[in-house]
Image (cartoon, chains in turn brown, cyan):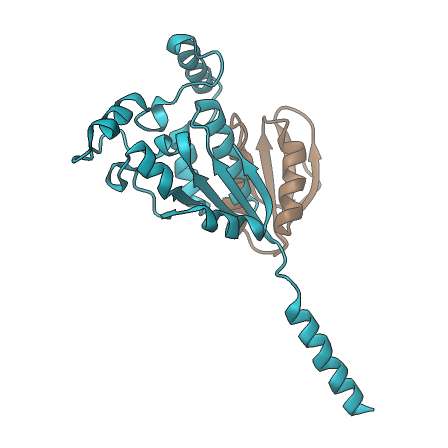
Length: 78
Length: 181
């Protein structure tokens, strides 16, 4: 299990670019500030896209786990 | 002493006000080509930018305007040249061809088939997402006139307006990213 206290799991498996960032931008508002979303994705590009998205939108990627699916932990910061 | 500070503050304020406006977190994009592949790139970048919280403006000009035609809407009252252009240009985003490897339609059909198999977003889906992330569409009035397109034959899009080059330049000059596709 993950080391993070996850508020929501977002399953984006099978969705290629640009859907992962589109989906996270829509879903981030559904959790409270400070809560964490676990994203499941099969798109390897997301590993660099999510930190880029987070830095421009003022959120935070806490970490990611390689694997199938890839897991990315996103914290809503504002 | 305090008079000095007040004066310095006023001078500083005047200086700040005189500074040129800064760049916004904004993308201005010219959609010129009207090829399927370039259109996909334009829409993926635009929707991605929207998801990044950027303000996004797309300017459709020249061949790009054909991608905004509605496949069923008809516009009457055209002269011969406009009617001919209407026939020759693609009737909407789903009739666009690849810029390379079109091969009489075979290459384009193959790519569309691959996109379905690999679950890549189609232009229809990308336009839907564009609406959701508030991508603004601005259409070059001069291209519309040149190609003989009327506004009544374009798709329904909530944030669409018609403009000229000055509108693009005004948008582009306060954008942090500008693209020509």
